[in-house]
Image (cartoon, rainbow, N blue to C red; front, side, top):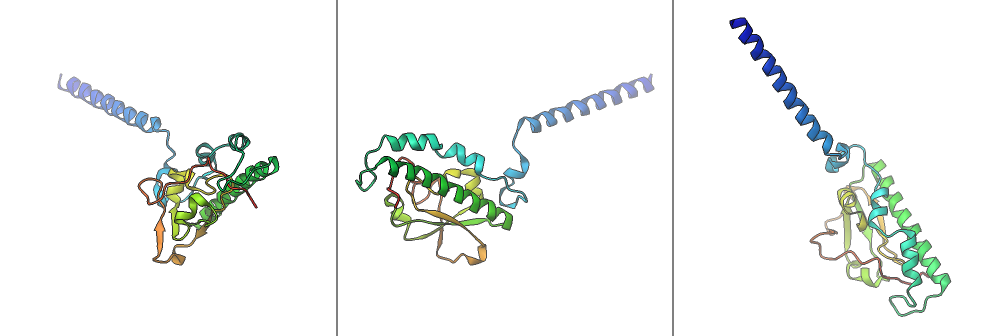
Length: 191
């Protein structure tokens, strides 16, 4: 009789252990977040921001539709069809350049990227006088922080090694920062 009780007790413990194990496995599988990409600045392999940028920034069609509805740029200069097409192409080319800078920075293990704001960009002028950087984690969480910010924006991003950063660099933040990210619904005639 004692042996039968011991066997039943062991069977109950094994079933309980399997049940708990399966519950934990389901929780991990339901998370659907690739662990390597959520490990912060310490991750070894970085996922390109390309897919996230294309959901955070306007598509080429959205940019062209917006430009078609505009008669003048920020400075009141009239826009021709050629100006609109040039601004749309410039926006796409500058966005691609930013993405390549991040991808190259990932290959070198760069954690911070310098934003070179242009004083010619009226919406960006207020932070063009300072030296700003964004972290790779910022780019992962807020891909809208990658320049260009609107068609005609001349801001760029440069991968920098941490030893090159001086004390005068400020962290450009999407949330709670000194400067809001300019709206993409601006336009500056491309020279």
